[in-house]
Length: 345
Image (cartoon, rainbow, N blue to C red; front, side, top):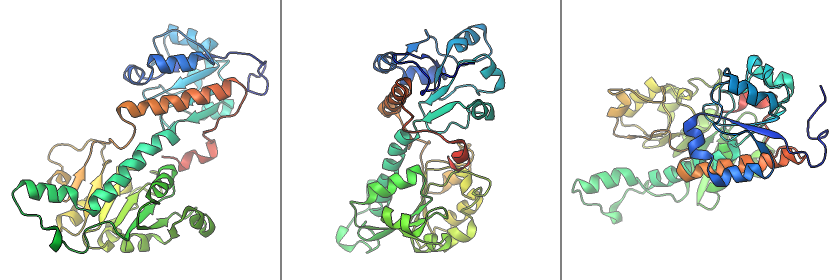
């Protein structure tokens, strides 16, 4: 079969593209502006989007597709799906992780993959920085106390309140972890990093001090978790690390709930030793009556750090740009490599 990779596509060729994602995702992301951006560089298959690769219509659309634009709710691109897509050469994902739909069969075919993870990293990093600063001022606790009628005397505040020269520990220099470090630079904060894959020289270039895992937890006023969930990181943040944190320190998690030993966290929170800001839990939606709900020193948000509302447009814009690069013979600016997949969130 002739290759249609960028190096072999004829000049002026407009690849056939199709969309594969859940209907709700399509409604949120594929507005007229986004469709126009894709249509400038590709010939688009007519709607509706594909959310099931086993139907006759899906097989007919996949038969001509060279580029697949995917999103949340895309079915797995397994061997059976790829058998219906003999011309498929690239996938552009309008969200972050591709683990849900990119299978070994894709890599074995040599399909190129791009992800909008870099665009999705920004709102997560912004949420993280906001929570670091708010927790330093104890905003949520003080607002609750103030509403209850308690006087707030800023002149007699504890010297621990505030964000001047506080220490922030970053667990993992992931895409999001690095973006957090970047956004923290304007503030008077000391930033520590634990990541066994980052050299001292790279840490210096990032402007952080590399430390061991134990030192990160013992010396930080806020520990922000950004490590992907892997077999080696499941329950990584356990009781010993939590008990080693400074009194009134904050554990902030926007990564995966299972990275933290949640039972141990509940116990430590009940002792009123530390505070927590959790945008992710295990399971993702905590059932009513879960003991974490009873911990007033835990702020739990419904996985909202990632792209929301108009921020989805940023993901679509990046995906459209990536499609344009590929369609005109350039390589992806945000490729996903098979060898790095195990280290991605």
